[in-house]
Image 1: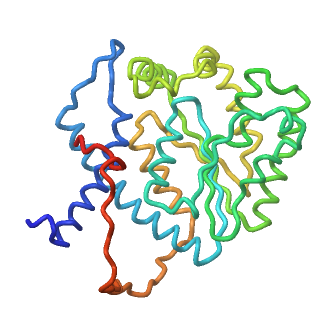
Image 2 (image 1 turned 135 degrees about the horizontal axis):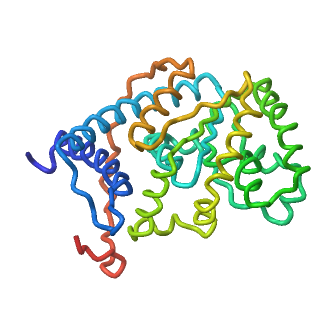
Image 3 (image 1 turned 60 degrees about the vertical axis):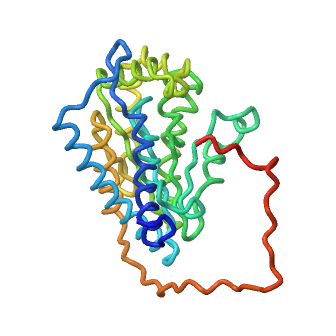
Length: 301
């Protein structure tokens, strides 16, 4: 086909879009304990094809959801919690990949600074809550207090108990204000976390994901389990229930979570006016100036 043909360019754009997803999948390369990449079986290859087909279909539905959120003025907050390496970041990437970042925002807050530690605990999170027509995804949330802060001793017993007294009321307030709140816990086994940490150690593309806190959380597996059980028991309320995503299989976890999220919102396809591309205005006296060669990026590829 002629590279200048519009149909050829359209096809190439679609292929490039699929390649973006393949690039993201590099982070899922399986490694053994020695750091060697594991070859995929025919069954695993077929599973990947099914995964891509379903993911792209659901991403199309997420675009429809986004359009409906904007048109209806819906306000939505989604919390993603779970152990380190549970797959929270992976599902967030797939949800937001085709969406408008002005509509669907991701919030991943660092540890609080000295000033924030003196504020009302929920204050720094409330700053990021959505206005009408917005979706906000929290990669970890105010539940840090019930998890890492409790296990690592970053909060006192009084602060911990006050959190459990306050969080149900805080979340009921969100609902009364018209914000839909979804809370997901990504659940992985001891063995799966061990395998994912080894993968991060051996894969130079993933090593940045490992922190001293991650390694300490591995040692304190049982402490985190107890903290999680208390958290789910004390904050699973009718107005904002917890949803647990079995996440030992990353791809299944992503599909199941996105499918569930879509089914929690009464969205409908928003009709759009047909778009007609206007003809470009051409002026006889216009001449495009060449770019100086010293400004050009070297064409190495």
